[in-house]
Image (tube, rainbow, N blue to C red; front, side, top):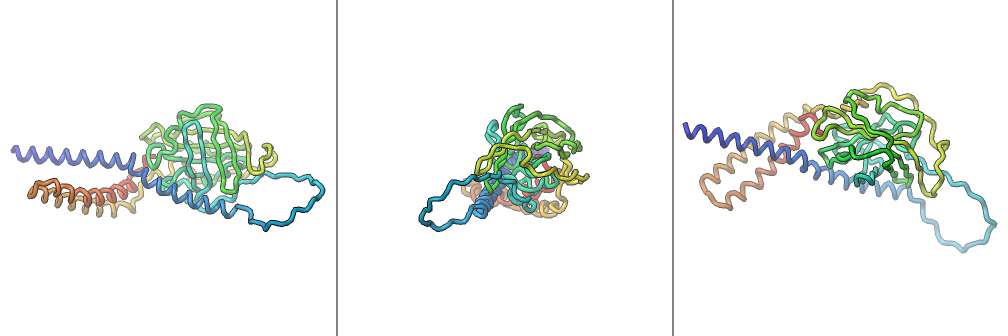
Length: 309
């Protein structure tokens, strides 16, 4: 009887530890994956900057010429890249945020960083540009979005040097199905969306901001007339729903089961060896392989479950 109770107790303790480790993986382990993705996006962004850089011209003897009057035209946002590729840099000084953001808001896109809703205008264009981001996992870029207040600045910078500064107007909390927050507008606006409250996907926190400054080399005074014409009305599209990417990936269930079984076998073997040879070295030899298999299991398990944003 006592042995049975002790076995049940050990099983419950082990299950509790595994659950705690999975929570730790979601809150901190996913940050490692996001950091690697951000490093890759930084390299891609630097390559784009090189592509936009003007070609070098050979030095020639200066020739005195009559002064001419030149007109500078602000740089426009580049064409939208393919889904999952880097778009630019989003910075929010108030909350210390500087992240590369990508095109797309699918589950895989948002693992790399904030994502631009493809069916909305590009930031800097006339209309309602929208960007989504995780709040508690994968680097949690929008973790402190609730701290923004009217007047706070949000800037977006492209590889071609164009920069656009927005000023926060308001923040609202809506249902995941309230897609009106990304509807197009006649004015240049920016909408940021993330989950609310923290550690939950029950609602969405939405920050609205207005374009106030357009700076791009060479610097030119902002003139709304220089913005592109308004884009056509955004059609109804399920991909625009703020709940996009929250459903689990069923194709990850198989690998999750497989890696879970392997992790269990390695764990049992480790436990058996430690029972026979109670030595610190036995514990050290077993902990490494077990954590590797457990980490891979957690990766697929996290994909199979609804996203926690």
